Amino acid sequence: MDRRDFLIQTGVLAGCLMLSPGLVPSVCAQEISPSSSSIQLRVWQYDLELRHTWTIARGSRKTSTITFVEIMCDGISGIGEAALSTAARYGETKDTVLEFLKKLDFRNFDSPFQLEDILNYIANVAPGNFAAKAAIDIALHDWVGKKIKLPLYQLWGLNPARTPITTFSIAIDTPEVMVQKVLEAAEYPVLKIKVGKDNDEEIIRAIRQVTQKPLRVDANEGWKTKELALERIQWLETQGVELIEQPLPTTQLADMIWLKERVNMPIFADESVLGPTSIPLLKDAFDGINIKLMKCGGLREAMKMIQIARALGMKVMMGCMIESSVAISAAAQLSPLLDYADLDGNLLITNDPYIGAQVKQGKVILSQDPGIGIKPRIAEDQQK
Ligand code: MG
Figure 1 (spheres, helix red, strand yellow):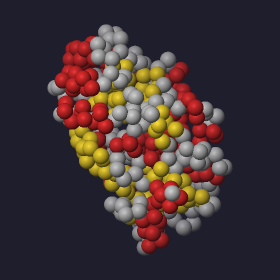
Figure 2 (spheres, helix red, strand yellow):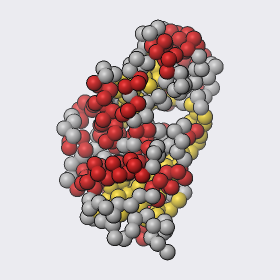
Figure 3 (spheres, protein in one colour):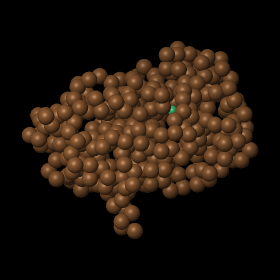
């Protein structure tokens, strides 16, 4: 059998168990590179378990399957992750991620130091598939940092003291449960409240009964008319809400322009912004963009997006999916460049197999470890 036919190897099995003590991944690690390649790729999937059922305007979930990749070369391993949006909003599923990764062939490359060429190759293997592409991008960057023994933020000349405060997200539930989640989130100074259903005002009023913290609100395309969005935002402006994310569906760009002219609150694009080329079209409709590695294809594209947004005079936030510390720590490496952060995906799960960037009183704290700054949780546990 050709090794490209996703051979499952016993040595790889031991590796995946080591990475997830007591938590066997839903699909065991698979090596998908031909042995003649200098760069080897391993892939395995893992079910993240959410502390609370995650509900936003377009759907719910209690677990989320992510795909880890490992790029190996010269005895060094770089780790990356593909995580998916609720209700497969961007067209990727755990199966499409695997299918895309199976197509990759690194035999034309000598080392991950050829990152630019490799990522240009990846971009052209198939359109879309941005979470799968992000996994490879993150792993390549992690490998480079580990090879030269520097965290990426140092390689990029970024000041770790400038990391932002991240919001902690409160997903949609009954007002009573959302209030309980707000109380559980006492250590986080800024909250992101998911709305977009019929009882938005009831929810915000209930939360305002128990906290006066700054709130950011995300409608996830849940309001379907510009008039409804205007009414809701004008009311939110009276409630100490700092910004609103994606009030209308992505197809309603003209309505967004109409809306932006009528409200004071900054409006951020999330679902409307994908990669770098999507930004210029949005500058009259939004004040800022929410960059996610899983929408844009990884750190290289995210860096371009930050520069493009700045050139257009737009604010920059980085957000996340339900992710482990692998993807969160990768995004955190760029976080000194941000105005706002919503990097809490790993804080919402109970079985994160890695340790990396931390959050202390809401502030993102970068790890001193090289690359994206992560370790398998078992290695950390054994040191204690
Ligand atoms: Mg959002």
